[in-house]
Image (cartoon, rainbow, N blue to C red):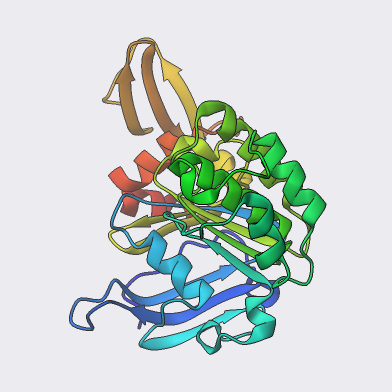
Length: 294
């Protein structure tokens, strides 16, 4: 019997690309990070994997990429067992770590050397990507700042055209203009046969690009839902006069411009989702939020 349930708003198991079945993982078996974890992710979607630091976001991505292995349960990615590290699997999965290592090459040499590892690599697309990030092809990778290296790695990952793209804190080190460009590149990269999973604790950076969200809390999946389903169940508003005695209010955060609140959508009127407030509401009242979506 699983120790917790995944709140999955839609039934994707039959057509999912990434499957976790009763997965148990931990760096020490005596202190598991995940127990009996079930997760099913479908192609054609951009998932936001949200959670506070230490909730296991990076570990979850690394299990998908075959860089870490569960001690119990099964993981399937495109029909492959990631831990097998088969060539066909590695050619269609790209993982961007939070701290990417790049060798002492020029940008151009890096692209030519490593792009050949990916059958669908698009050299022209890579050059366009780094141009959009204002990076020179002649720049030396080991002389770049952390943010510049991150831009090169993001552009390279997208140019590889893999079916599975896993990104761990990709916006760390990016300035505001670069974050805007990042969103444009991600949206343009998605297709019906691809899946993108972006893990971050910087919730605002995923506004307007994800269509599904997974929230980790206490090393468990507290919520998995499509955003269009979230706004059917919840309303997001700002109140000038706040009454915290209302039974309808699930979460409230006072601010200089009024009090931002998350409430039950009892009138069926869809509001613009505030991803940060949704995350806060789930972390603040996980049991109540699960009950709403179940």
